Length: 359
Image (cartoon, rainbow, N blue to C red; front, top):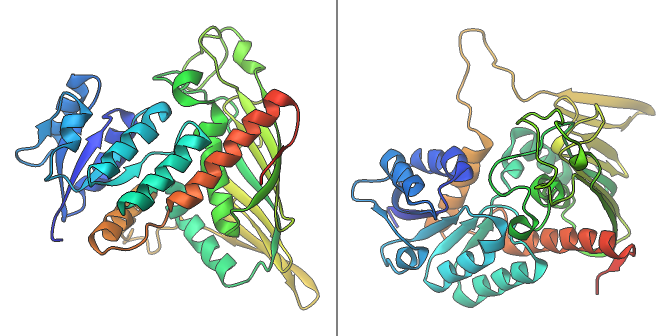
């Protein structure tokens, strides 16, 4: 395969801010198809990023029927991820779907089944795995420097960062609030670092506290409490089958100064790590405790800034390489499905007030 022909379904902010700019940098990619429920958005995206002769489709079924398209990127609200991704794979397309994998765990499982049944590649947009600090820490873990990781935290905390546009506050469309929006990134990152995808029991809570405030301070302007249908914060404890414990914290609005988003803390038998002000590795050496602080934004020599690849560029480049060279994607559907199952268990635990056990 010398060229990969890619189409985009959903031409909103995540498509035009992440997927399309990164795809446009890859020489072997031609962006040939665009669909959005707002036709004007698709037309604008096509004009800016489309290859010569690119098509704007009036429905995504016509797009999927185009046999020339090899890959589809699904950048729509959560409730349509499964429907579109499964239809795309059944139409013979490889699929990158934005996170979270699906609105429900059942839909996520259907996506895994469709990938196996069709033989098409499926990956989910967990781009924080591709940050420089994440990649370095993964190597540290794989080298055994932290030993057996038995306690971890998944951090996704904003002091005031409620997205007030689009459908973020719509529970029907999204399935939840900060937990499924940004908590999903932190949980994916943590489980990936631990290489542990076997949850045993989940106990979770979710809150509608600050969401009820009128004229609240917020990075993107005050929210309308009447339209704020999802939680503003959620927290959980997960016990894995091997006995490891994972704490999850996710909030768009919380009265705290300890804000960390899409980061994790790992504690193992030989050492620990956290993503606080860069990456810190801690441990014990020759009966003395140590902390190594690593930075990933240094420019090097004053006269040369070097070449820097963003996490999104690396994510998309690695995905296209997997398609072209028939490799397994870095983010597998099976891994992403477990994330969705845990997220759903947290919401269920909050609703019932009981722990949720996995078979």
